[in-house]
Length: 437
Image 1 (tube, rainbow, N blue to C red):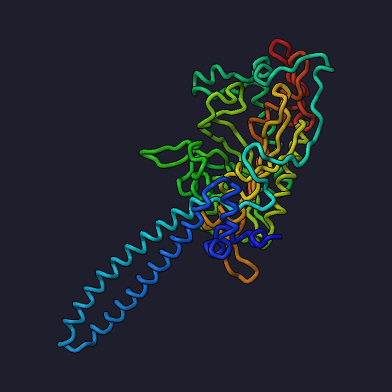
Image 2 (cartoon, rainbow, N blue to C red):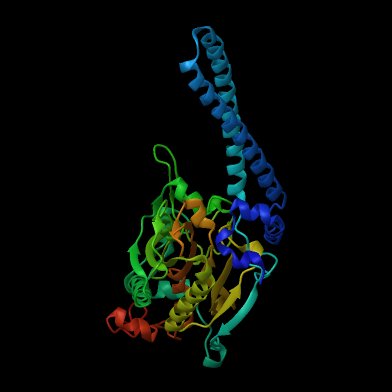
């Protein structure tokens, strides 16, 4: 196993970049991002260290002369005071140079994406690897009818209203009503119950965050155009996932991980501008500006991150099993990873009317990337503080309704509620079309 996998906690540590520049360059190449940025970081790092060394040396000399002035004979004081003034000007100039060098270094460092795990496939959005498939898509032809899409079903159930959603909020907004509104809430309650059973602390999170938190999680890099921003008189961002708030919750803290990882499930509204999605998935509720989600978030020791990643993937599969939809797991290619993820697995459900799989969940191992940027640490076995690892994973979201409706529809337009969800729906087994209840 390569050294940068073993030392997951050191990713994007400047010392790691100095010692393993080729590893970071290779990661940037696999992401199709700037390889030259690594050399820029190293150049600015060297300039910063030289500037700081010059400033600190001059500052030490200034202090030494200051001590001499107090005890110097009267005939020497004038010369020493003149020398002090001259040195003071030099110190000021060196401090300014050091500040500039530090700012250039920090700007370059924050542009770097996380170092991808070596097993992550190369390529872009279409270069994923299918890890496995679960379940068999229904043969609607054999059942004697053509499936309706989720919007037609939702409208027939009186549960999805995109026309009035657009009237109120514009395109890509909708109302959920009647039993479908209850079905969505049932799904989230089931997700929160499952998470709590596995030791996750349930939370309802803020949906507005400070710029420092949004930047710290890595969302202001390549995907910044997807995020809603509130400007004057406020300066806040609307989150696209509760991952952001759950990561920011422990900013500038030292966490106690002696009893194992700290794990949260966060429920929140989520907002995405869907910039660049013009004409894509405009039908129905697959790609919308506002939705809801239950997100899992983990703080753990760096050496535990890979195991925790597999556990989050297992949690997602457990939920997908409960809603009884066929799905596949893909290993996302490096060029399609978010800047904070070192590795990401997606679970994609079969959508019958599209004759393809669509993403329902993703789980990412962010190693120490977010923790370093947000200054979140833990104490190791020697009592020393060190950056920890963070991970995230979707447990349920509005888009799941698409897969549930289409995969559980009946010829008369009714929808059978998955067995596991029925207790959350007051025992209801079938959602009937309007007029047939």
